[in-house]
Length: 270
Image (cartoon, one colour):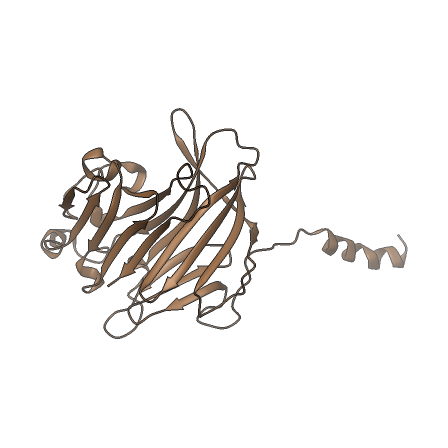
């Protein structure tokens, strides 16, 4: 092989590598690698360049409480089969936004695709201690089954570092309170084993939800809906378990009643 070809070969290899386009990110710590950083006295919320989202609460010393108490948010495009549902994987290199990375957000919008090339749009609005999520499916790509858009908000085991024989006493005053779509009020503790998605709890849909747990040092998480949509809750693997071990809050958009995606999933930290 000639010298010119040897020199050209590495260039061809580099040029042939696929480019990885994700959301633009902030250049400096503590938000390096984040598309959006939002900080309040009691919490901080970030959207990473791959659209992963998390909320960390601050303790009385003004530092983050720890990863086991972080709440993780995700955009989920759900494909419904006759006998099951499947959450499609977001393709990171498909993510785009006309907005610039920011530490002072008011409203941001990003789009992306999932496996099967279905395209979604997600909107997040920021107002004091409130964060509002919305979104919709833009097209189904090559997927043939019905698709739905939802936002998940996943709590972990907040009592991970508490001895098992002390959790019941420590969590005695913890509560999950909710209002169903037909305006019925109910509440459950976090120690008892329940199937959260059952119809007698959240399966038929909620309009409001309040979560209080001792490890969060008095902070409350209040969820609500604005516009046609509903909230449900699920256990890990959708099997009955004690909520203190972890659970997810799910917001379901209603494209039939809200095709433009104006409805919102509202979280307020108090």
